[in-house]
Length: 511
Image 1 (tube, rainbow, N blue to C red):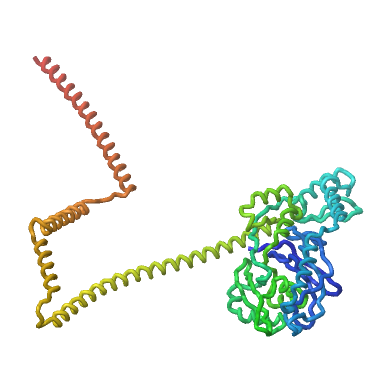
Image 2 (cartoon, rainbow, N blue to C red):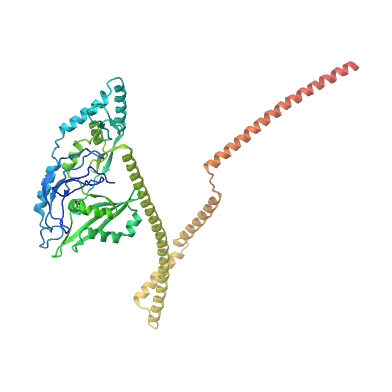
């Protein structure tokens, strides 16, 4: 999962450079150049730098519109290698160092926007606390309405007839729909040359047309035969989008090759004419996949994003589960939360798919293991049979070879030893008796074991519980029946006693 910390932008003379789309960690020290008639990756000459948070209002995550973006012009087709084409060859180390120094200088330079920001804060405070638009008690209602808009992060706050209204965005410090999450930091170096292109197409379409895509990208790079476009990986994204990671290899006339740096390739893709060609191919986003330097990470962590409470930002840094691999990222608004949720669902599906594949592989391996074990047992039996047959052949061959010869001394010694062993085995008090006793015990154990195994049984716990409940109910029924019988016996005794008294009374009367 990649998240953007600013969209780089820049201008130089008449070179038109549009703002790069959001997403990824792109934009760190990138260079915007204007190319000639052919494709060139020569190191540009930097003419200016911007501050860390750019010169415009912060958008997206609030990290600004550029992280040390530089502008420059390139009038040549590249130096080095003596060909005037390609990426400027392998002799651009000094230019790259100069570019890096200028880029770092622009990265950590501080913007001079204090007056504008101060006026913005004052106007916002006036719109939320003391608007003077109507001059009566309705201003208090307007202030509450402005506060509600500021909390929601949308709308305009009117507070004075002579001053334009304040535009409330989700980056304002009063917006309530904000949270801080964590994103993985890339660990690829600039020398790896990895650049991410996001296509507005499905993964199946990209994979089916991968070769055509590589050829189209090669044409975008000028069709230079010394350049080779390679696909590092393809991954599905939400909303039917696909992420394609590419790198370009440049071959020199002396047979050596190298990967074009990611920042150089990204700067070429950000040129106006090249960007238009990429959009025609379906590219909606391009970014570099390079690791952040310790200075850049420190700068990001020390300065809270626009609209994020410094206390919340500090707490997010403290709660970071893995500061070495994760970096806090603000989530502003429901759209960003929904986007992260979609990405999380997509990653969960990918993980589940990978787990299913691993499970199928494990099942196949288990089947293969069972088949292999059966074959091994079969081969063992076959080996034993062949060993016995070989021994019989050797015995017959040896008998045939020794036929007609007298018994030799060593054979006589061997015969004596065999006779001695046979006698010891046949002696009643020696091994034969013990062997017979052991065989008897083994037969008895097998017999008793078979009898015990037949008598063994097991009752399930739930079934045993049901049996106990049923027996309990039967016991209660029997007890109730016994009590009824006892009551009936008492009634019968009373009836008998009454009948006896009646008979005596009648006998006395008739007498």
